[in-house]
Image: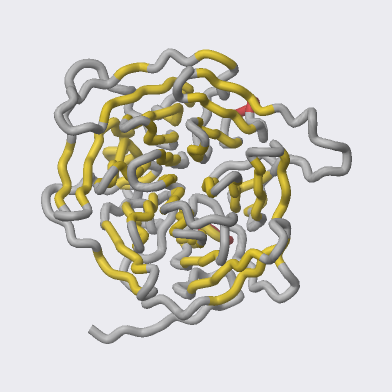
Length: 378
C-alpha cells in the first residue's frame, strides 16, 4: 500500500504532522516544534478516545471520528515515529467513547464508556464492563464479576493504586455521579467490586474531569458539575480514603491564579508537578499549559517562547508521557473537526522516572505502581 504524508495547514483542518514542545531552563517557558511527519493512516482523526503509554509506545483505543464510534487499537512507536495497528486476538470491547483505560503490569484495562450508533442515534447506552488487553499476547478478555457492580457510566475517572482499580464519578445517562468503586487486579483474587466509603470534602457530582495520581493520592481538577462547576483541585488520599480540597488562599497577591474552570482537558503527573493542557474554558478552546507544583502548592502558566509553533486549542484530546516527553494526540478543534495530530513535548520535569500517560484517557506512573484515567461526556 502506498503511503503519503500530510503537511500541517493553518486553516483549522486536522493534520497528521507531529509537533514537539521543548521546556527551557525555567519551568515557565517552553517551545513547541514540529517533528518529522507521521504517516497518515485510516481512522487517525478522533476525539474522546484513550491513550496509554507502555514501554516505548503509545496505544490509542476507541473514541469517535465524528460519524461513528471506534474500537480499533492503534500503536505509535515513539523511537521509530511510526504508526500501526496493534496485534489483537479475542473479542475487543464494543465501539465506544468516553471510556477509561489504565495500565497495570503488562496489561491495559478498559472500563465503561458510551456505546451505540451515534449516526442513527440508536442503541445508545452507558457500560460498566471491564476488558483486559495483554500486551505480551495481544489477547482481549472480558472480566466477569461476582456480586454488585458500579452503575454503568461514561466520563468517569479511573486510577490504579495498590494493585486495585478505582472508579470515580462520571455520568450515568441521567445524572452526574460522585461515587467510588474499587476492585483487585491481582490474579487469583475474587473479581468482586467494593463501594468505597469516602470521607472529607469530596468533589461535587461531576464528569469531564481529568485525574492524576502522585504521592499515594489521586488529584481531580475542574470538569463539568453544572452550576457547581469550579476550578478547584481536589486530592483523594488512598490509604485514608479521604478527600481534601486544596486551598488557594495561601497564594500571594500577584502570583498566577489556578487555571480557569474547564472540561475536556488533560492532566498528567510528572515528578513534583501536575500539567494541565487544553480543554473548553468559558466557551473557548484553550491551548494553554498550566503547571501545579505539589511542593509549593502554587500554579504557573507555562508560556511558549517567541519561536514556538503553538498547536490550536482543543478538547477531548489525550495526553501521555514517556520518559521525559509529553505527547498530545487527537481531540476536537475548531468547527468540531477531529484532529489527527500528535504533538510532542521535550521535557516534563527533571527526572526520567517511568512511563506516564493521560488519555482523555489514562495516566500511568510506572508499570506497576500508580495510574489514572478520565473520560469526557457528551
